[in-house]
Amino acid sequence: MLAVIFSVTKLRYFLLGKKFTIETDHIALTTMMEHKFTNGRLYRWSILLAEYDFEIKYRPGKHMIAADVISRKNEVRKHSNVLIAHIHHKQKGLFSRERLTISQNSPELKNIRKKLKENPYKEMFLEEDLIRKRIGKTLVYVVDEQYCREIIQLIHQDFNHIGSRKCWLIFREEFFCKNDERICKELVGICQVCQQAKHRNFTNSNVDRSIRVQDRMELLAIDFLSQLPRTTNGYRHLLVIYDVFAKYVRLIPTARSDTETTLNGLTQFFTEFGLPQKILSDNATYFNNDRYKNFLLDKHIKPIYTTIRNPRANPSERAIQEVLKYLRITLTEDHRKWVKHISEIERTINHTPNTELGTIPYTIMTGKPPERPWKTKREIKYAEEYTKLRERLQEKSRKWEMKQQDFRKKRKIYALNDLVWVKNLRTTDTSKHQSAKLTKP
Image (cartoon, rainbow, N blue to C red; front, top):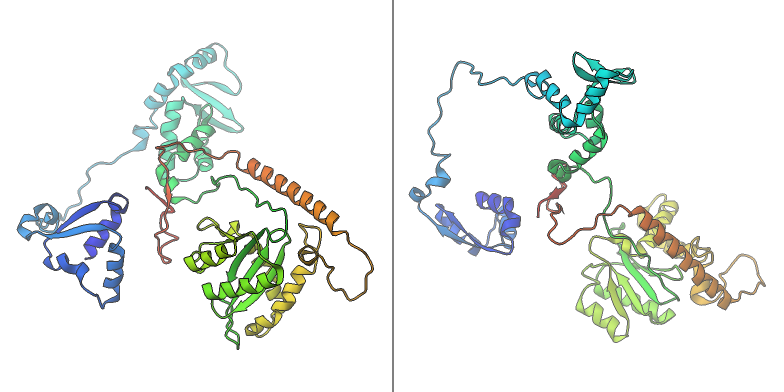
């Protein structure tokens, strides 16, 4: 069974979506998918094979000549004497004087050689009929582009696929070519091993767009802050409800993170502030199910979702960061008492000016000034505040999008049938740091 697992995993991208046949001389494997395994490893393997459409056929061992040729091959007699087949000397091949002479006699350098014979320069001259160039205190050989590419490819592979800058520095120790740094970047950039194994130092995602809203209760963002220390009342989660326009936060401690708990928390929020137009959430099962969707649609609320594996698209994540920050500040001894500080944290976020809005979320949400230790007689004209607030948010959104466009200006636009690398998501925790980051589709 291990051989079957190894084979289908190795050829995964060729087998998915296709029906195929596995031939084996192990007759017990023909019925392996019909059994209920008690062994944990075999059970996990059967789950892994469930995503493939295949049939296992029995074939006697005497007919499995091709598969068994390696295991049935006679053992090769070991020689006691050391045999040397060949010794490769790089100096007699790529880096020989003959190869260097051929490079410097190319049409690309022919005119330079002719001029140097008539009038040598201080920084470039002929030495033993070879073109030399002085770069600082170093004398190097001048080569053509074809020879330069051969040397750089050898350096790149010989030094375990180092980066373009290191390749260029090693190349410049002995050679010079016009646009040699550009050639290094080009050759390293198209190396398949580097593309598959190295971390990306740039992003090629789409240009980000900001979420633009015009009024309170136009868009709510919700999420759970989970895996908190269990309290004496059994609370382990925190339902976060966030008004995207007003930046108002409602924090509801819960014992479970499920659909029932979510609907109860939203009902409590609707009773106090009314019904929103839309609610944004991630694709967790307690948000993306028929019961949750029907609950919102019955109240004429549109459920919308972020893209998969993209938590930053949910504005409530920013509110969760604030909650965690204040929990670290307030909790000093017993972390199981975090629920006692939730109302204080909620008041801190909602009753203090938001740096993005320039005003107080509680005031925008309720139309009332927050409580202060002192009495104030200052009147606030909320209609004017709303107008100014919308203008500020629109201007900030416009500037942010322009900044993102400048950041993504070198983004690659792919066309139909272009070959691309796919992120490898099937690595285990124990080997993910040693596995290739990308794989072929």
